[in-house]
Length: 271
Image (cartoon, rainbow, N blue to C red; front, side, top):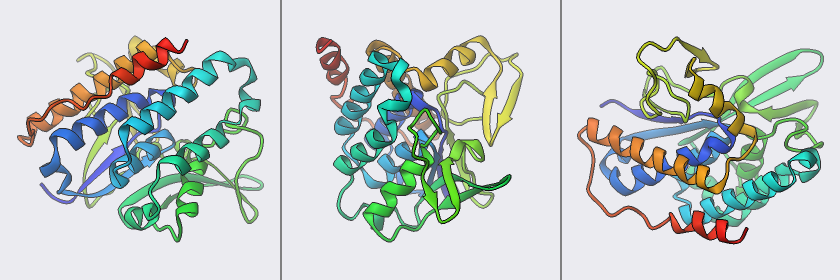
């Protein structure tokens, strides 16, 4: 295996699938991770890329994700006033270690979209971070969907910076073996739900996508959080598919499943 880039697709609240993948890779793929040279992501995928690179505690990551999902489900009609951007920033500030920017620099690649009047739209991959605050800022920018995330669009000088999925939803590198991780079924991603063999596939901003009914249903859950039971199912599906990938590569290492499922039941019991 050559130099490896693990690429996480932007996917909103389907991201619990990718959390499951991270749990599988960190629990059962130590030798695989030793081969990983880069980890990239867009939007929510950038958060999961950061989880993997910075080894953030999955328990805390899942708890924050479940709390945010619950808040949005309860008051979805107030989305712009919920200030999801602040939720992302506060969550990152609570889980990232003090030297996260040093760990991430030159290994983590975050996709952002730059907008400059009148119609200059460009993608940028950011991989160097001078401080922990800058890392959090870039991650928040990569996740910012105008109005959905809030009213105050991030800016750099005279440019607005928004969700990286608008211009590159799955950052890939020609000189690397790209392991694509996506919660959307496709035959073009190394780790994803299985698609129908006869499904027609498209590529959206580098992300393979099978045109089938289950994927259409999944699109709704990008912006409208599923129930905790649905999020638990996503996590388990990602965990299973992550293990399956490692087994196919002959890199699977037996270990107990991390004790994380209680978090989903705990949040349900809170109502």
